[in-house]
Length: 495
Image 1 (tube, rainbow, N blue to C red):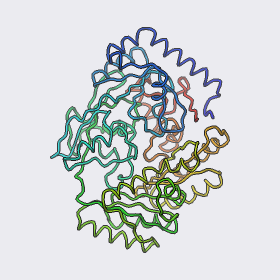
Image 2 (tube, rainbow, N blue to C red):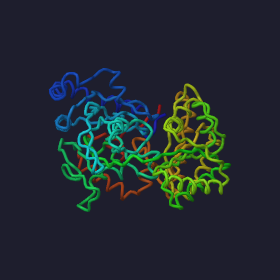
Image 3 (tube, rainbow, N blue to C red):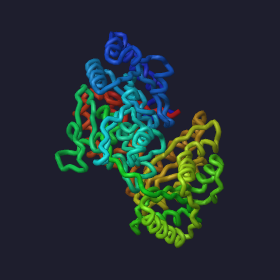
Image 4 (cartoon, rainbow, N blue to C red):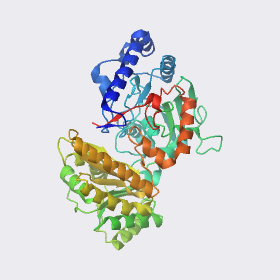
């Protein structure tokens, strides 16, 4: 399915982009790339290019012309200067776990795979912060921190690159207590389009708060590689809680489950995770992970704190859940049981896929005020039935963010059309309820028009002005976040 341009025009554009990019490579740029990264740091084979031209979304693969593997910030800067001189697009790549087509090389160019920059650089245990390079993933960092009594709690499910998580403003299951990447990034080292290296809070600075000047750090958090390449991030850390306990509670309706969530938060319970799964999702998880939970709307909960504080949290939460017709809690207290429970939640993607073997999954992502959550989930479930789509629902209900894991046949154009119409309606339904079209996946390729509807033309124009100033040649991850101008239009294709 082609959106925006005709297929013929799209093919012609892609042919022109490829011809331009390939000719640049043939004019000696490849040898310059090799002089910076070494021979083994410049790869042109189709398999590697295709691997770096797609993420976990349903957007089709747009492979770059070349994949580069820099080893340090100086090499990233030198590559950016070279690409800027030759007007060669740059697409940063972490682990490829994004869900909105953010790594697609829609104009060809050079993919900068940052996996070789994988050092944990500066750990300050007494100050609860650490600086890492872009090849360090969430799980790698927490293994490194295991003996320190500290951890980094932002958990999007996938073992994503921490700098990639900053670039997409990721969050996940722990956000209700610990916040998203926006609240947990203290400083960034960024290479701009012309190769300039900037430190958004000042070189080496890591205060817990600051009132100094514009918030450049949060300008780049969520910029999805369109303003620069993040080469270091300084992160806020937390003490590992003394005690952790998890629970599962079933409800007769979505309204009861969400009412419980709102009342738990209103009661001031510092709950760490509170996840919602609808009946379809629970059924899929039961089958895939060999569980036996009742097939009804369900909350997965986790509590962090001291033994004494946990007793208070759990007692209050149980009373609230039971007042909303919730079942008795099913507990997971030891580490193995808790990991098994949350693995089942994180495996929801694969559980959904198992409902229709051979199909692909597309994860939607909207967020609304908590009070509107029951209404939007109910209307969304009705829409799924009317649209004849398979779409289990799972969400970070504590902050109003939820996903439909839509399972579709990629070879059925009519079903893909229904998918596109459904996701469009869902996003606009969220906007009509004072919400956002994306709570954590980002804009990428698929939600550029929705961004304009959400923030308005004046705000988008301001964003475009920032983009024009930092990247006047529009080389940084072109085609993402902002709608392309007519002169450099980019087509989105869904496979």
